[in-house]
Structure formats: C-alpha cells, structure tokens
Length: 310
Image (cartoon, rainbow, N blue to C red; front, side, top):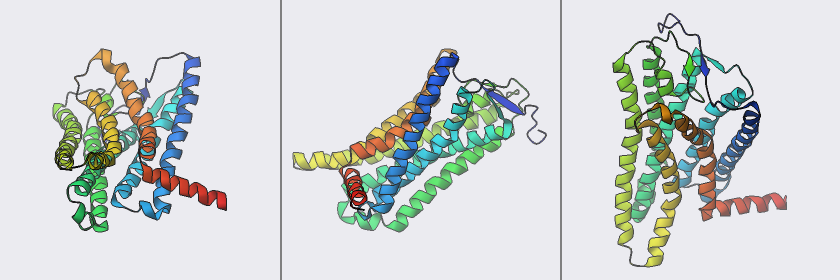
C-alpha cells in the first residue's frame, strides 16, 4: 500500500467474544431486525411517495431520513452478520476505509437532515401563515441537497486524513465494524494533527447540529407558550414529539460514544451502543413516526383499503 504508506492489507474485526451458540442466536435475531428495519423504512418511503396527502415538506425530509436509515444499516449490518457466522473476521483495507467513509457520511447527513426537520417545525409553529412561502419545494430541495453534500464532504475529509496514516500493525479493530475512531487507534505513528482534526470534526458534527436544533426548539417552546388554549398547545407540541424522540435517540447515543472520555472498560459498552445506532435506531425511527403520527397511520389505512379493493 504505497500510496498510504501502509503495510497492512486487511484488518480483523474483533466484535463480541461469545460462544458459537450465542453467535448463531444473535445472527438470526439481528437478521430479523435488519429485515424489519428495511421493510419499515421502505413502507414509510412508499407511503410518502404514493399518498398525495403526504407530499409536504415534513414528509419530504422524512423520506430522506428513511433512505439514510436503510443505507446506514446496510453499510454495517451485513458484514456484522457474516462475521457472526464466520470465524475468519477479516476485512480488506479498502473495504474497511469505504465502510468508515459511508458510516460517517450517512451519520453526518442524518444529523443535518434532523436539523432541517427541526427548522421545518420551527417555521410551521412560529410562522404558520408564511409556511408555504418559506418552505417552498425549491427551498426544501436545496436544504436536502445541502445536507447530503455537506455530510459526504465531511466524510471525504476524514477518509483522506485516514488514508494518509501509516498502518503497519496491529490489525485488530476492537469493534463490530470499521468505525473511524477504532481504526484510528491502529495507526503506527502518532500523527496527532490528523487525529485531532478527525476527533474534532466528529464532535463538531454532533454539537453543531444539536445547538442549531436547541435554538429552533427554544423559539418553538416560546411560540407554544403564547398559545391561549390547552388544546392548541398540545396539538402544536404533538407535531414535534416524533422528531424529538428521534433526535433524543440519535444524539443521546452518539454523544456517549464520541464525547464521553474513552476507557478500556467502556469498549464493550460502546460496541453495544454502536449496535443500537446501526441496527435498532433505523428500525425505531419509522415506528416512532408511524405510531405517533395520525397522517402516516391514515396513509397506511388508505393504502390497505386500496389493496383490499383490488
């Protein structure tokens, strides 16, 4: 690997240290959860595309979230499932870097899409009369494209910095997949500038969007408190509840993994949290938006009625 000054051609994904019987059990459990995640997000995406009542900015961004969740899970879970059934848990250098790149790209894009969704809720509650003008389809398209572009651009910077590091051993990635900080620990030179830049951007991608959403929700809370009736306040707050649940799950876990100081005792806990992030979070997002959203449930009911009438 002359280009990146590396002697390592493959890494070993350590994963969980479990018995063979437990690994087989986890394989089937995770496989079912992964399939359910794809089906649930695919259902949300299909309903939004087919039901004209869901052709609004809020559901336009939700469709992007569904695509991200399916891609996010598909980047990590299939290799993790293969490793549960295979004792040779190796991954070549280039696929490992690609997995790292896509993992961070989808994560960063999801952060930005969640920020855009909070801005959409801010406009809907604080400026309802100007909502259709402010959140025009042109603006929504620009916001979505900007989120995807910035997410992948930030991840590309990480990948380039990672490729510049020399990897001459060890090869054991103490994780379920090629997560960027776990791979970074294997560099055989203490190139602290690259390490600081990578870690800082990881924190920035989390803290920056979180601060923007906090500002949006401060204005939303202020607007809700000005509503005179209790029913009006509850209705306004209910439009944000699903988004708040998704934000809490995504950022809560990510903050623990990337901002809380690292230690050897926490490595197994971080694997579990990353598993939740990669497998359970994409599965829970469509459930949160369907179970807590009357419009999505209505669209599903109409789709089932059309199917029965055929």
